[in-house]
Length: 225
Image (tube, rainbow, N blue to C red):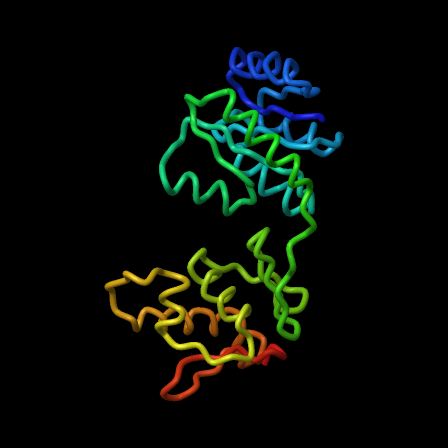
């Protein structure tokens, strides 16, 4: 099994190489994001261990670029950044797992083996409604050939509507799935984001895919409006 370790802490990277080789892995090392991306593009790996804060290109960007290029090699982020939003960003850019420094080498090996057993996953399904397309993995959206830039919350609302396309969903449904069940703000926030989405994915293209069902909620036309 071949592993790529991308980390600018050279002593740590070398320690990982020695330890992983002792566990039976073949290991390549890159000490910056640009070289790490090159290694990942030029070789086939069973898993990639990827630091976040590195010279040249961050681990976030390396992982996102690989996913955009339809490379689904399992990635585990190994980093000193341990905040909730750091973990969320890592997973949202396509990482499969996340481990903070300092870490247990035995746990790292176990997680790598788990990812390898799972194998390289197929490309996630792109959600479609007519010519409206949304890719949950790369977090990109298109109307026809035109890519539409969405904020993370707009993307989440649209993803929920597209997964339930053709069905009527209530404001409470959207809040519970995109925010959470304990959301205590104004439920009309859903209207705000629906309006933003209409202004981005419908009106500029002469469409009306996101429908208001009076007294009930919203429905996304399964044919894309």
